[in-house]
Length: 394
Image (tube, helix red, strand yellow):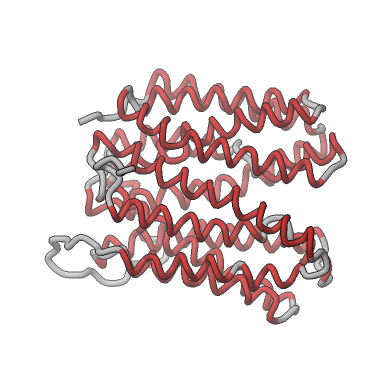
């Protein structure tokens, strides 16, 4: 069956690249904490490791997005980003010293930071304003299928070889390097540019806020405020684990969430292009609020599956669409910087959100943490409903 015209060869290949890269990353999702504990990492050290890694990814997204704009090229950043992430998988088991583990994990996150904004800029270049949400959502859907396939492969392997956890790190290198190979099928469009600019400073991308348009700023403010309350999915999974006492159930609801996310991303992207991105995005915020309100009271396995299904619909309604919406508000030659600024600040906000939610959970309990997030998202919904403009359609 032929793909629609807006799913160009570059969009399809980039989506396959993300699919294989996510298979590699998500294969290790169930085993990384277990492996780290087995080599002597405490819970504190694991938390510190993830915090440093995510902060590195957050800052590097804006930096490399800005650099790709200055250079007038995207593909080298994408290719090297996926290569570093693939290489980091076997690096994790090469040595067991804490500093080496930090280096390997940071290498993986730098890879993510290196590729994210340039890749999104490539996707934006392949779409028109009228097809932007569909293109970004198609890519997100393919990426999420990787988050379904990866854990299933890992669970299957561990079922037959439960003592060979470290072997998974080597196996994960295979889809990771396949993702790099696929990037050689992409031919980047030639950009008209007077001359390549010099390498930017580490925080130069932050200056983009001063020159960005009013609509861009008005959209980013509520998105970043929302990110300050949108804590890590790990807390949702922790609630499932505590309520059911089963790691297996927690992993299965996570896989189910990604399956719903993957299936509905592209259809909801098409709907956003047909109606308006704002309408679909706001519907997604209501689904998010419903998910967290439900998580405050949920205790049964069936309820968790329902809520994680709703959560998957939220992600499908917002993740790709938010980037498409942002990219329609900035000039093509500034796409890397504009998206890079957003994803950098979003990463930092998410890190703060997880820390804050964890603190609230510890002091006041899980119910309070989830209800706080639910009501905060309703505040964002109201602000965006009244003060953020509808997205351009043509």
